[in-house]
Length: 588
Image (tube, rainbow, N blue to C red; front, side, top):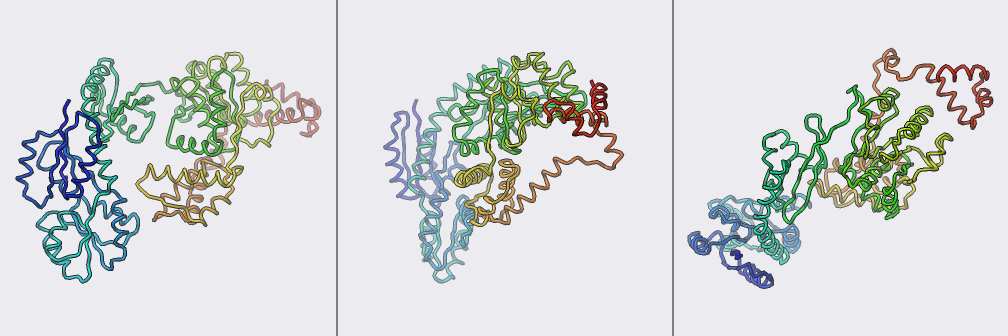
């Protein structure tokens, strides 16, 4: 295997540096040639070099790279200019009284972006071709004490007009990484061509729906024949990949995505899974728990808040059929912890299902419906806010789990949304004593250093996923964050900081941005947690519980609070013991 690489340098310094870098690349398959050429020179000589050399890869910079892309079909890599290179030049010239940047779009687009991003007072002038360059420089000549930053092409013309110039160099590391990475990538791609075709043949004949993504181009390299027959499914699959999702929905079916990274390619396959639904589509008795962007945030938060403690518990508790009890305040990522236990229990091969039993009708459907998830096996069932169920419903479910051997068929995770000091209902003593327990602490209980580290991680995660640079949070804003109550803990902090970073108009988070985020969270949380009732009549119609149900539940709860003493319960309720027995009998 021989790979011919041509490096076209627009200035002598780059050529000298390129030769040194290439001399250090120890790969006998690569053969390097070097040409010194800038776009202002005649193209004919460069075309002869290209025709004679039969090159597989060409490496250049800026305007010269742009020209090469127009005159050859060979792959051209622009080593480019980094933000650091631009900032370094501007910083070096900060004592110059009058400064402007002049160049072709390949450079000025990046310079403009950096100037705006870092709020630099730099005039940027773009010339689209050589015809525009001369009149632009002639006009700049009229300005006194002007210095222009430019590349090799503009520099030569500028000197003809007697203008002061600062030559924009690509840094050593910029050139080094450009050459080394592009050569490494090309060699890998060359070797992979045969392998990719083999994968394509195998996956197509296995009836797999797959997409092979070229990570260098960030574009699909190959798409399965079966997937091409369903354009809508293909579109949703691609959208899910672009959003880094593990799942997506198509025609009311749930599709899981698996991926394997191999060199410069990522192989994505998707498999279809049935979505469980109850008969009444207006309510949701259960739903799948999916990996998401917020899951990544919780992972980072837990790594700071608890270090390895919770990870060790997750690993240990996933190895048996013993139920897990997660007790903590709202917004601590209890469902995320359940998902992590599930992923380790079944190695991600089965479903993690969040079950809501707080609605009386949905609870009955789950127990009685033949296609209920409670009759399936090898899933993880997260029973959300189990402590908020009525005492009767809690006991009914625990009896059901015992009678149907639910514990041996599935991994059960109970979440209790409460403070530890709130205590436990006595009828749940058996569950508590026979379950693994995890107690994620509240955000308020963390020390200042851990709190600040979490804030820093959330800001860094935001920068990685958004086209916005946030460099810091103001001291006033930080104090404001540290002194909040954070009733909904990490979930509230994530939403408030995200909204604050969305709303800031510069690269700093202010106290006003935090206040705006808090107000937004309160409004959103209120909308999501309060039912909309048009009038009192409708409220009566939509109520899930009858008056007898309410009375019965009150009696049962009072008996439990009195440790089963019905006489004491009747006395507390100010009713006779006979009345108490009558209500109990009528509801059994």
